[in-house]
Image (cartoon, helix red, strand yellow):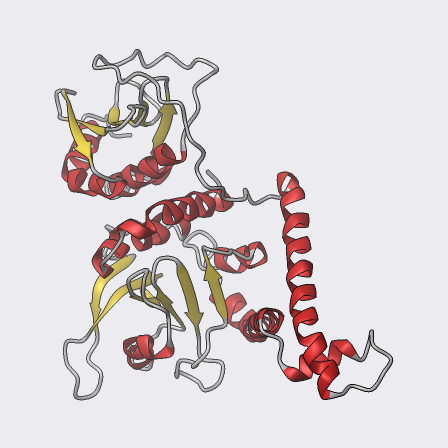
Length: 369
């Protein structure tokens, strides 16, 4: 999948699973690590790229930890502080980020709960994190126009100078848009007057203000609704796939015997859950091989995940077509398949050692160039 599709797949995962995530650690595993690996493209298992529980002494405070530090060209460039999905993101939550920002080379700090991401830099004073973010991504209502700015932070396209140079404009545009949103929902007196005098010819009295305040709110709501409908109508022509709520799927029979790998009938449909499961397996396997070598190949009764798209090198299988239960199949060095019952997609992480082990077994048999 390309960058936009990776973002869309993660959005779907967040929307489907956010109610199940109750702790910060669960949010890291389910949402934030996939964001770092599949969206930003950094190897979460390589300490030369991603350092969890990053420690830096700050004055008299020793041994404080930030959740993740992302390195580029050997230098810490991005700091990430994580919260639970239920937590609102306030500047008070970013206190550790604020302290660490001044003692590292990082120019980008990120505060996230896995659903929303706030990106900070040091526009107001050098080497001092701003109080307000220059970029805000909200997976509940993603602004597609911000994706090119996010892409600049990926491993492949990391462009710090470009991000910093655009940060001030992004910061103020974002704040203006959020202010407009607030004004549309709860019109302030000046905003009511601003619009009323353009359509009402009489004197702007207190009675007129009271009359037009609900009218302005209603007109604003209808205007926003019209904009949303317009966007939905043009979505098919958009470069970014609109994430949709999952539709009910008629489950196929849960076969005990594995289906031949070559069965690729036209009615096969890869579900959003299978995409999410594939992304997790791929993120795990990336500690051993390059991401492009882990390939998804769907069939009627299971979704195969293969090394080098070779059906003789199975990495895992997703049996997600059952009516109620879902299973993950892992393989040992002899390619013996073992099924594991999954309570949720997060349970795939419990079998990370088996996934990495079988990938290593394939790599060990490869002939060096």
